[in-house]
Length: 169
Image (cartoon, rainbow, N blue to C red; front, side):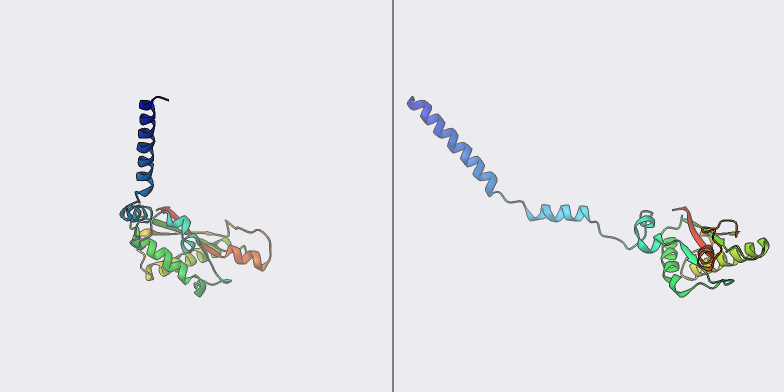
C-alpha cells in the first residue's frame, strides 16, 4: 500500500474511534430524566374527572341495595355516597339520574311510590355529603325493570335497588 493511503486510513480510523468514544462518554443530563417523569405523571389536584367514572373503584359502584320494604341506606353504601357526592362537587356540570326499583311483591302503585322514596333517600344522602340538588333527578320504575326474574329472596334482593346513572359527566 502506498504511504498516503495508509495515513488516510489511520486518520479515518482515529476520527471514527474518537467519534465513538465521544458518544459513549457523553451521559444523559439528569434534568432531562426529571422532565420526562414529570410529563408522564402530572401531579393530581385531587379532583375527579370523567375518566374516573370508569377507573375509580368507588365510582364504578353505582347500585345501592335496600332491605325488604325499607328506604334506609345501609351503612356499607355510605362510602359510595361520599364518592359520588365528591364527584358532583368536583364536576358541577355533571348530572345523575337516580332510578328507584323494587321487587315484584306489592301493587304497581305501592312499588312506584317505594322506588321513588328509595331514590329520594339516595338523593338526600348525596346532598348531605355535598352534592347539589340541581344535579340530581329521581325516577321510579317500581317493579317494572327487574334485573332478576326468579321468585326467591336472593333474586328479590337484587331488584330492591337504586341505580346511579350519569346523564352528564
